[in-house]
Amino acid sequence: MGPHRKALRTTAVGAVSATLVAGTALGLAPTAQAAPHPVRFVDIAGEGGTVLKANVVTPSDAAATARYPLLVMPTSWGLPQIEYLAQAQKLADSGYVVVTYNVRGFWQSGGEIEVAGPPDVADASKVIDWALAHTPADPAHVGMAGVSYGAGISLLTAAHDERVRAVASLSGWADLIGSIYAGRTQHLQAAAVLDGASIVTGRQGAEVRAVFDDFYSSNLAKEPELIAWGKKRSAVTYVDRINRNGTAVMLANAWGDSVFPPNQSADFYEKLTGPKRLELRPGDHATAELTGLFGLPNDVWKSTARWFDHHLRGEDNGIDREPPVRLKSRSAGPYEDYADWKSAGATERKIALADSRTIRAGVNSGADGGVVFLSSILDQVAQVPPMASIPLLPRRWAAVWQSEKYRSAQQVRGTARLHTTLTPTKESGTLVAHLYDVGPLGLGKLVSHAPYTFHGRTPGEPFGVDLELYSTAYDVPAGHRLALVVDTVDPLYIEHNPSGAQLTFSSPANDPSYVSVPLREQ
Image (cartoon, rainbow, N blue to C red):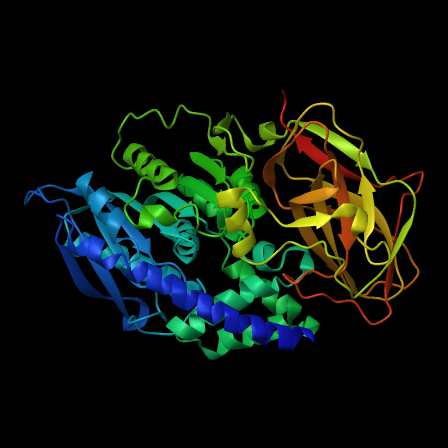
């Protein structure tokens, strides 16, 4: 099955997923109806007069002359405007004016989907304008928050509208290209879910449809345009503006986020110079925040409320004095706090990738990253990540290296890095590196992975490969090994391996190959 046919098939799966997610959000409606604060359903004129369907919740004891901090919350991709009502009620209880709105192109809002383009950013500013004119909102204390799509729009708006003093980005992105095109590889299943959801719940314009089609077809001639399109929609492009504005930024993501991997959030966090906080937990895209959307106790939303209480309401709740990086291992255990991101994996241990390995391309060896959403949710709920029997992996299709058995537990924290020398037989190719925790019987549990694609290489000529695997927190038990498995096919991604291609991995004496694993100091 070719890449385009696989994309179409997966898009159908994504459309079904979108319908189910939307149904879940609609289930929040009874919560909103039973809540004590009245909800106003209003129309707000966005950029160019586009109608945005919105909800307004204000403190129940609002006095005629009182002013309250404002929180603006754009909806997630494919979800309706009632998405945040349970949290909006709680925030109104705490003294906020909350305006949630359906982004353009989805559900009953007007316009076409812009994928966080300039019209979406302009819309957010128009919503702020409207709230300041029609609610008891304080113009000096404005914040934005959102999950997924709403998170990305919130960050971008903070870069373009200096009135936004604080942001909580939940399961969002800071680098769109570094998310769905990381390693110069199309993240097929993630893109197809987004595509399918937008077809079911929104209206795609010609530009967005062309972007998806070029993405699926691996149109290299359009690659520069795709990258420029993505950079315009990435907060990291405007990080200097956010820093200049002094915006307080909280980032919360999940280790297994199959749409926006945690690396790009951690990289963005490192570039911020103002008040900042980074929280990473087990789970997949938006699953860590999900229970909070039903009004249930939730760590992510608790941190979000504390972040705004301090930076918008001036509450001395201590969040500014806490270590700003908070992580939770996928292997259970309490939260861990660090002074900065690099301190989490302060010790690095290298696994030598000695000897030469040659593999044939085009066949899934059995080592892969699982299924979008399903695999990471299973890991979150039951600590059952994708698995593979390492001894049984066919060496014709997979290159395998293993560490020694560890005498004590190894707490992997951060970003593992692969460095190797690759010699291809074709000018293009894709490889996927998988890091496994291997038990005594040879069963490997996936710790991390990442894809890498190359084009325009001279066949038979070696070149260096440096690849960051997706950041994670995972505890390898004593008596286990770590194994690096490299093959060429993973259903999560579009692969670019011509028929008959082979890849040879070597470790020259003057440039040895290795995988560097970040470990927590014990």
